[in-house]
Amino acid sequence: MAAGVRLARRRRAPGPPAARPTAEPHGPPTAPAARETRTEPRRKAPPPAPVAEADREADEARKKEAYRQKKEAEHEERERRRLEREEEERLAREAAERAAREEAEARARAAAEEHRKAEAEGGKTLAAGLAKTRSGFMARLSGLFGGGRPVDDSVLAELEEVLFTADIGVKTATHLLESAREKVRRRELSDAGRLRAVLREDIARILSLDGGATADGASGSPGPARPWVIMVVGVNGSGKTTTIGKLAARLNAAGHKVLLAAGDTFRAAAGEQLEVWAGRVGVPIVRGKDGADPASVCFEAVQRGVAEKADVVVCDTAGRLHTKAPLMEQLKKVKRVMAKAAPGAPHEVLLVLDATNGQNAIAQARQFHEALGVTGLVLTKLDGTAKGGVVIGICDELHLPVRYVGVGETVADLRPFSPAEFVEALFA
Ligand SMILES: Nc1nc2c(ncn2[C@@H]2O[C@H](COP(=O)(O)OP(=O)(O)OP(=O)(O)O)[C@@H](O)[C@H]2O)c(=O)[nH]1
Ligand SMILES: [Mg+2]
Image (cartoon, rainbow, N blue to C red; front, side):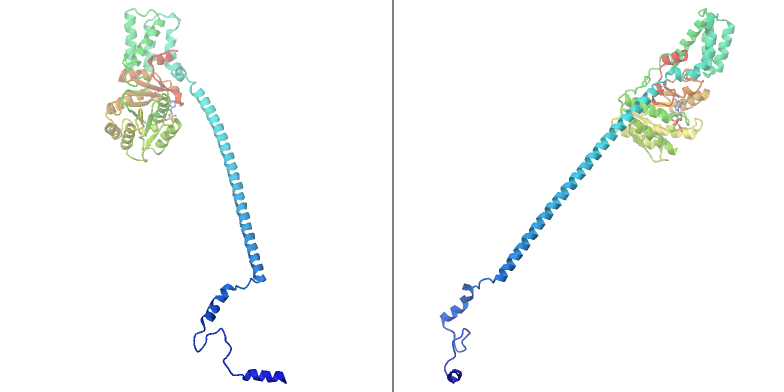
């Protein structure tokens, strides 16, 4: 009963409401009360709940673990890269060692091959190259000289027959025969052995152009002009390109700086043939397009020879029949154009003659000389013919120096021409 009365009183009790921290509707709250209301949350931060602390620690642990894993992954990645790098280095080292080994083996093989070639190439002597000629007309001549036979009319008649059927040409045969007859008349020829010596002297004199065969280039080395420009001409298949290749090898080995010009733009394979030689010898080459103007290719080569201070420029040309006037005109143009690239070029017009052509080689030489002013000759393929006597006829009739003779297909088979050596080999 008493509790129920107290409750009712409290419900009905008049008076102002109890002070609350909320804003007073009839005026501002007293200053201390207001201050207390603003600062209370800052001063009294509730202590962290134990659950939040556990979360934070778990989070921290997670982060640490993640960091550790990241570091471990980085380490593994570094390790993997290092192993990869080491493997790559090992493979590269092995490849380099293998390449060096293979290169050394290839070098040894090349040296052995070079040695083999050099032995093969150095083998043929001029006498061996002239074997067929010696067994031809020279053998018949030798038949006249034996046995201390006196030189009478029958010997002279036989001599005439041998000389006129040899490939030395009628004019030269006549010269030699007249010389022998004259000596018989003057009683200078006591026996046939002496006739042999006289013939030998006469032939040596003809081959040395009466001692005048010492013009520039006669020794097989280039003359004084730089670059020394050589234009190589001749009929089809006479051996021009091969001769140029051999000549380049010879000059290069002698320390001359050589440049080749593929002036045969007519035949598709001609440029390639010369390029193979250039590669083999290790000298540069100027090549035009197939069908290009040969004069422009040769002009460019001479110009480059001047610019690059070459010692020798050797220009190939397309083979042509000496009887075809338009083709000879084209060669004249090539020659003229060369002179525009370097004054005095070409310093040598080298005519390549196939000795197997015999007397026809003399006709070729005459026509090429008329058109171009040939300054030197190369007689190729002497090894394949008994007509080597043609050299004597060419020198006698045209008075042109023979610079080289070809007695085979290897580099060493192109030999600078020495009249004395040639006569020696012929009469061996
Ligand atoms: N046995 C022998 N063969 C030779 C000699 N010189 C050249 N030859 C060969 O003759 C052939 C023709 O030679 P090339 O150099 O191509 O003749 P080319 O004058 O350039 O011919 P074209 O360019 O067609 O006019 C080749 O098979 C040469 O190997 C030689 O002195 N002796
Ligand atoms: Mg050729």
